[in-house]
Every structure is written in C-alpha cells, then in structure tokens.
Length: 132
Image (cartoon, rainbow, N blue to C red; front, side, top):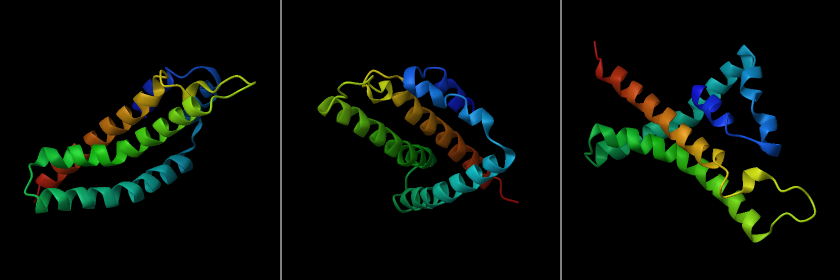
C-alpha cells in the first residue's frame, strides 16, 4: 500500500483519476485482494523454490526470482501500451499520458511490485528458517 501511494503521487492528466482508488477500498475488497494476490503469488513461490532448490542456488536467488517473475509482466504490459502509442499515435483527441515513454509511473509501478515481492519473499524466508 505505501508503494502504491508513492507511485500515485507521480500520476497526472487523464491517469490521475485512479490516484485515490486504493484509499477507497473496503475491508472486504482488501481481503479479496489479499486472497487474489495469494492465489497468484503462491504458484510463483513454488516455482522459484524449485528452481533455486534444483539449481542449488543461494537464498538470494529466490528473492530475485520472485521479484522478477511478478514484476516483469507489469513492465511488459506498460511497454506494450507505450509502443502502441508510438506506432499509432492518438489523433484528434488529448493523448493518454500513461502511454508515453517518459511517464514515470510506468516504471515506478513494476519497480514497486518488485520491491514489495522481494520484501514478501524475504519475510517468507525468515519465517521458513524459523523451524520449531
């Protein structure tokens, strides 16, 4: 949530309509989001675990893999819309700034996903290390 807030501070123009949506979530929508994120992240955790285990890699690779696997699709989607805007620019209307290569939130969003997932993977490793 703090990383979403930081990213939202850089939104402007037509994209600024979404800035405070995260603050308007109800407790139920927050729980639904946590469940949804859990369903998406769990397979990634399992995949990264087995890649690190079978590759006999160090623990930091687990954190790197989890962060990369979950943030690269976000970056790819942003780049797809930016490239589309370059190839076929909007004509006759105000362009959507979020489709610009220089629009900072396009890069802050995947970076914040990577940081959040790296922190989550680090916390997961800390709890997994603490065996009774």
